[in-house]
Length: 553
Image (tube, rainbow, N blue to C red):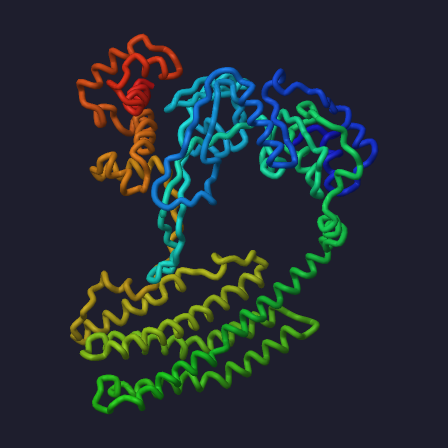
């Protein structure tokens, strides 16, 4: 934010609670207690209390000549007042100093959060704001806020969004004054600071650091050493935080602990074996005449395999403990032992996956066997995860040995991605070779594969959403209902769509109106549509005038 070395030095000292009398003297060079904010346009007052900021804004608005215009939000659905993003009533006059409270999400990027401007023209349906530094005027478009309910989709486990209500208002507020708290994150070229009543540590720092340079600073009262201290907790942290060398050693230790725990968990199949044992014993509780009972011997054989692996896997985990607790820890030796264990355990674990997938295909073709299929589905998921973790373990050790950065992509390969799909493809071919009737065709194989988590698509702009509904042949009124927005808001979207040439004015308005509007706009050069609206009266609505104006750009 700052480039002035002198200002940066003062701010650093202030933040670190090392402010000097010289720093205070530098800041107090900018004290102007009688500074006339009315005569000096473009300054915003930063103060410590909401009441102070509100009083300054109300008084400044009253001091302006002319009639004020009030604007209220368009609220649809459930949008409680306690979460209103801006004041419910916006009162403005021509000449009012305003600040934008949101970023312009459109391609034009006409404004950003914290950008200051002056109201140039007003009407009940139009606000024009002038930016003196750029000598540019823009029409302020309404902004949409949504009250969204989030829930977890029971099927996909993704986060679903439900729009309960919308709040549409102009994204501006009076800005002769703002509290230091609300200024956080904003940047100003010019600001008058009223920090005579600083009551929180660090508040003076926040206020001063909003400015780009000392050139734009005005202090309405002198700063005193006892009023600008930083928070002691922050200072204590700065003094006591760990050194870079300490953090490096800690990272090495925690990395070693992470690898150790990951490897042990990869060879710990006690819970998996118990699930197989529970499944095996469940056959004893069923009638010998049931479909499930016909698979009892198969279940016993599979459970025996996993239980026979517990003893060697337990011994191997003990070996891992010795290797990792050894003062002369050698990752090369660990890698060799992991490769040996991988080759020993993968074959029987992999065979269990094949067995259970084959059995699921069989059971799926039997009547009255849905309960068994559901039980096998749970077992298959646990068994497959155990095999995939073995495969990831091998990749992890290889990555550590090669000193690669460890992330999700490190523990991911094409073999892992297609593991179950490849198994099912082979089983399907075997079933066909045996002339066993298949319920699923090749396209259905993927229904067994867990859906890969899709990358979340970037959130669509509200205007694009409206356009997509329009392409689906919905009317403006229907779109408003579908999107929980007012018709006026949707018309606002069409102004942008027409301006961008995504929609033609002839798609919205009949030919006779277009001809009449063409004559009305002939020779009209004003930025504001106020005068033209007075001429045409109720013959054309504000929405129609704005859309036609957009079509001329």
